[in-house]
Length: 351
Image (tube, rainbow, N blue to C red; front, side, top):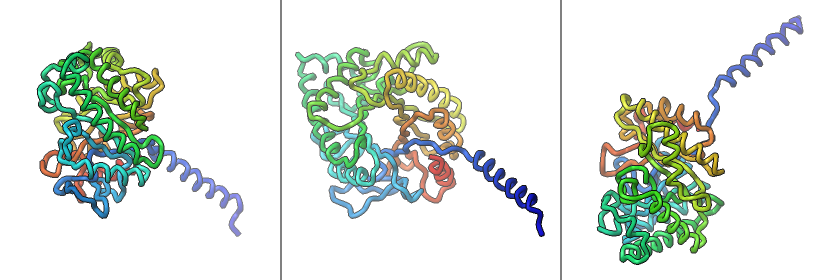
């Protein structure tokens, strides 16, 4: 007959081992993962016809079998009454896929690469115009009023498709801390930028749009390269508590594995500043854009992004950029069947 104490002792050892094993497993993050234009095109495929599709294809689903938590779309072109956005996505398709995403319980984030209202050039035409844009006595102001009305009308259409609260995030006038947009810091002042932000948001309020609004700077180098300098810049261009619901930042990894140190340095500076401002103002916190183009750092998701997200447990979502269907090297999500895809699946399993 086996001694009772021996049985109990071995059972205790097994139980203790299981507890220790569970304790060693990394804790899953509570962060939503998103991908720009995920369901309208991807590397080597596109669904850009002005028609209704019987089903939805998804870059993320092709790799993991699951739809994304969050999908990003851009409404650049809506201001000119175009039928397609600046990346050739029909606005009718966008509405169709927003409806499907909401029905699945997912979220959508909208950005707006508006054209330069003074010159008619694209968003990257940095000809200074913002002072005229916000001056009510100028023709450029009148043009911008029409553009804001058109953008708001489309956002209202998207918002009306929601099936749950807080499914739509509108990210207005993003990356103003860079020097590449006409509303950026080298072509505008903080006061004029804030006036544009508030004007846009106020008009959307007139339409009673049910959405969350995100403020998302990029690189922070206007002041001294210190945590305090980064925070000062983030705070100085902040549109105000009644206008913003989410505070985030955009930061991209360049240079492959050799660029990891630089990326993490910039990401920490920017995320620290955004997290501090969000906490002080009682706002939500997000990593509003990031990515490593063509995954030149193959295990980027598991060795770079995942550890970074673990440092910021209050991040609600992270969005990576698009997989262009017509530019082979412009992708931020791995292709199915590649080694990078295996790293990505491990990453997703930790969220």
